[in-house]
Length: 156
Picture (cartoon, rainbow, N blue to C red):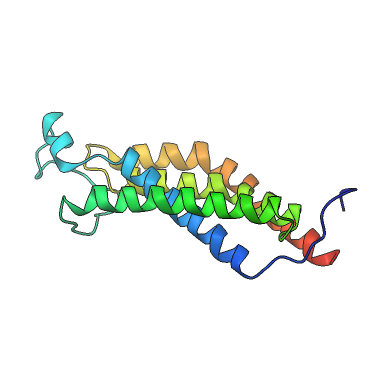
């Protein structure tokens, strides 16, 4: 265990705050990175030519910014609540570290979904390149979070 690490027991709400942060981040990143069918048409890709690595669920176009803004608000709220718990001493530093080590994984997840559901030509190539480049980073962050969480629980 790291010397001077706060070993305060973490409140159960901390997991909810972390979930808000992670889910909100994934949704906001998807919204920011997605390619709309209109953008694809502007690039010369007609709906009949569009290739999807994963066919996206049908969403009304008005719902996309709503999902993105709600995701952004969830991420900001969750992040603020996680930081508040850490600053108030109601959560151990290691649990905060675990939460923030998972943040890039949520970011990669939102980006992955945006690429996987993008109307494009050669969609599988883009998705494959993303998995090859970001997959190892996501694995490192996941392992770091798991190790931190295990060490924290072990030293309780």
